[in-house]
Structures are given as structure tokens and as C-alpha cells.
Image (cartoon, rainbow, N blue to C red; front, side, top):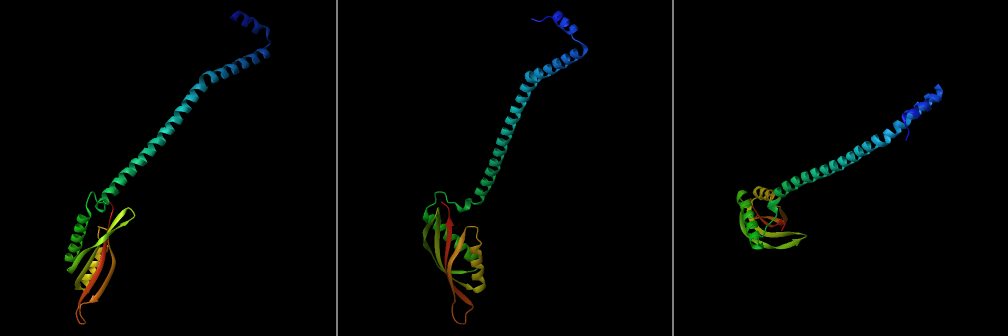
Length: 185
């Protein structure tokens, strides 16, 4: 091993310029060793921590987006739950549909002459129930009735209709309609 006396003897033999160069080389080597042994490991560790933080932040942001969508989907699910039937038979659905059509007619002062189920059809993943009705009322009342059917929150649609005057000089009109309701099973 090198001892301090031998280093001292070596330095005393060097002239002033060589000693200056030697000190610069020693300082430079010390800085390189310090950087390699101390700074690089700490820097690489900080860099890996930063990468880990970025990954976790991305994961948290993704989770927050999913949670936000979950809340939105739940809210929309609640909003559209009236259109989804849960274990309701076809007869019960027709009964409910006929009751809704009758309630709309009564609210609009429309006299129902005939109201009967017209069948059910599969439309993709939904089911379309059809009701056939004959009614009488003033033209304005029939138009209001039709407007309220189309704007119902129960997904009612007028499939076809025919309006005729009851008699030549009467202000009362007769209307035949086919109304459908779409229900998601």
C-alpha cells in the first residue's frame, strides 16, 4: 500500500507545474469516482421512482375516468330503468301498455271506442308491443292525444293512423291508430 511518506517524496520531486497537473488529475479522478459511486446510483434511483410515480398517476387517472363513467352509467341506468322490464310477462306488459293508452286518452278527453292488443315483435334485443285503438273526439283533442303519445316517457310511437270525420257535418272525428311501445328485456 501507498503510505503518506512515499506520496510526499513523490510530490517533492515534482516541479511546480507537474504538481499542479497532478492535483488537477487527482481532483478530476475524485470527481469522476464520486459521480460514479455516489451521484449515478442516487440519480438512477430517483429516475426509477419518477417513472414509478408516473405509472401510478396514469393508473389513478384511468381509475378515476372509469369511476366517473361508472357513476354516469349508473345515473343513465336509473334514468332509463323505466324502459327495462324485469321478469314481467307479456300479458302484464300488455296490461300496463293498455292502461297507459287509456290514461292518455282520458287526460286528453278522447273517447276510446275499442282498445285491443295487436301483438308483440322482437326488434333486435328489444320487444315491440303494439296496441290497436279506435277513438272519437274533436280534432284538436285527437291531435293533442297523438302529441302526448309521441312525447310519452314510455317510448310510445304511433305506427299508423287514419282520421275520418264521424259524419259529414259533425265536428267529431274518428281515428284508428296502431301504437307501439318498445321495451328492453
